[in-house]
Every structure is written in C-alpha cells, then in structure tokens.
Amino acid sequence: MADAPTRPVLLTGAAGNLGRVLARELAAQGWTLRLTDLSPFPDPLPPRATFVRADLNDGAALRPLAEGCGAILHFGGVSVEQPFETVLGPNLRGLHHVYEAARREGIRVVFASSNHAVGFHERPQGNAAKLDVDCAFRPDGFYGLSKVYGELMGRLYWDKHGVENVNLRIGSCVAEPAEARMLGTWLSFADLVRLVAAAVTAPRSGHCVIWACSDNPGGFWARDHRQRIGWQPQDSAEAYRARIAGKVSGNPVVERYQGGSYTAIDYSRAAPSPGDPFALD
Ligand code: NAI
Ligand code: 15L
Image (cartoon, rainbow, N blue to C red; front, side, top):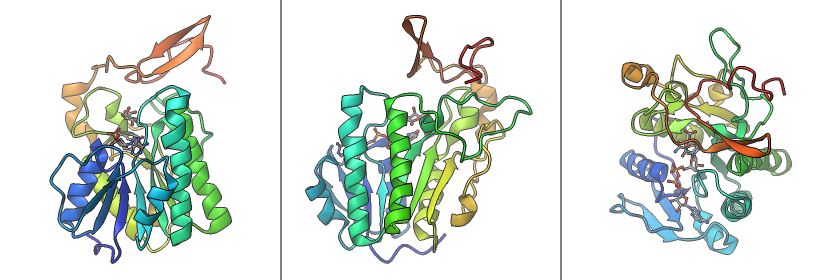
C-alpha cells in the first residue's frame, strides 16, 4: 500500500455509491479527504474528513474546496442515461469547473469515466480481438457522450495546461456481479480503491485512460495505460460465474432508433443480434 498523500484530496460525488466506498476506504488508509456532493453525506464522517454540500454547476463554490489539495477525484454528476438537459449542467459545465480548479492548483484529476463512452462497439466474443483503450469513441447515449467530453477535456487540459489526468473507464462497480454481462465488466470495490490510490500516488501520469474492470477472463477490453500508474486488478468476476451465467439484467438503459421507434438494448447481451444493421458501422 502506498503512503497516504501528504495533502488533502478532494472527492466529488462523495454521497454516491462509489464516493461512499472511496471515502470510507481511503480514510481508513490514512488519507485526508475533502468530501463534496449536492446531497448530504449519509454516513458518519470518516476520520480527518470534512464535507461541504455544493453543486458542480457552481464553479465559485468548487474552487475553494480544491485550494491546497493534492488531487481531485471527480466522481460526482449524473451517473446513468438521462435527457440532455439533465446531463448538461453536472457533467459538462461541472466537469469544466473541476478542471479549472485543478488548473489553478496545478493538480491531477482522476475522472470516473464509463464504459458507456464506447458502449456502441460490438462486444468481442470468442477469439475476436478485444477493444484497446484508444478505440474510437462510440457513446451509447447523452450520458456516455458526457464521459467522452470528460476524457477529451482531460486531453485538452494536459496538452494545453499540463494538468495531469487519469480517466477510469469504469465497467460495473458493484459489491458483487449481478448478471452475465458483468462477467466482463465487473470492477470490485477493492480493485477500485487500489486503482484510485495508484492514480493519485503515481509519480507521473500525463493524460491516461484505463479500463477499470477487475481481472475478468470474460472481459471485452485489452490494452490501456495502467502500467503508467502501476495498477493491476486482483479480483475476478469468474468466481461468480455459476451464479450469474445466463442471467440478464432486465434493466436496459441504452436505446437505438431503428425503423421509426426506439429499441431497448439489454446490456446483458454479449453482442448485438445477428443481422444487426449497425454491426458494420
Ligand atoms: P451515484 O449516482 O451514486 O453518485 C453520483 C453522485 O453525484 C451523487 O451522490 C449525486 O448526488 C452527485 N451529483 C449529481 N449531480 C450533482 C451536482 N450537480 N453537483 C454535485 N453533486 C452531484 O453514482 P456512482 O455509482 O457512485 O458513480 C460515481 C461516478 O462513477 C459517476 O460519475 C459515474 O458516472 C461513474 N461510473 C460509475 C459506474 C458504476 O458502476 N457505479 C460505472 C461507470 C462510471
Ligand atoms: C455506468 O456508467 C453507470 O454509472 C452504472 O450505474 C452502471 O450502469 C454501469 O455503467 C454499467 O454499465 O454497468
């Protein structure tokens, strides 16, 4: 385990599912955290942590929170597919506020991107080549598009201002994988915490993008920049195969416009249907 950072670390989205895990686990490793969210923090405050309620839309509120920090963990915002107007404020304007705060402080951003930035790629099956992290962006909705914007904002701020950033293209980060698709996409909480710790404490990161999933043999993703921060996942969804193989989510969140109407796409499928007219795009 790397030493705790010497300066505080700002965590947005602290009251969310992943924010709460990170707040608890990083504090337990001796980190000093500044927590922020639009919603109240629902747990007892971890040792050394402070919490300030703020809206990502409000750049003036965010700026002082970053002052004196060593890094920003940006996990706040809309986290599922929503209409464009709902995504716009937190995920686009808010993201800009986070990067401006990082630029002023000269500190690294660790950004919670998502597999939905590339969600319309076919999922490789069998011996088909897996997706490298520099594959084309193929967002599967306005939410995924906001993650593309977030990653490219990181690209811009590194190229133009030297602001380092680590973009975690997270699969499905839940306590246990719940359906067949997560045999590929699952990221354990422990691997997430180790990933975030590596992303903050690595001596240099530049602009990098990492497939944030555990060491799942059923995964869809291959080469990325993990060596740069020295992270390797240690858990695997495979241990859950017997329980979840064949199980579908029943909770599709991606839709395609086809033949005059929208068709829901179940994330649990391993690949688009045979004969899918979009497959060769
Ligand atoms: P979540 O929805 O539980 O947490 C997001 C938090 O952001 C919430 O506490 C919410 O109150 C806060 N928030 C929303 N709008 C805000 C605003 N305008 N100002 C300030 N705070 C605001 O999501 P979760 O699961 O914790 O995910 C965290 C991050 O990781 C999100 O950015 C999500 O897109 C990303 N991610 C998560 C995955 C997962 O499997 N949980 C997978 C891929 C990406
Ligand atoms: C995400 O980006 C979402 O934040 C999360 O709620 C899940 O839907 C996850 O992706 C997933 O693809 O399983």
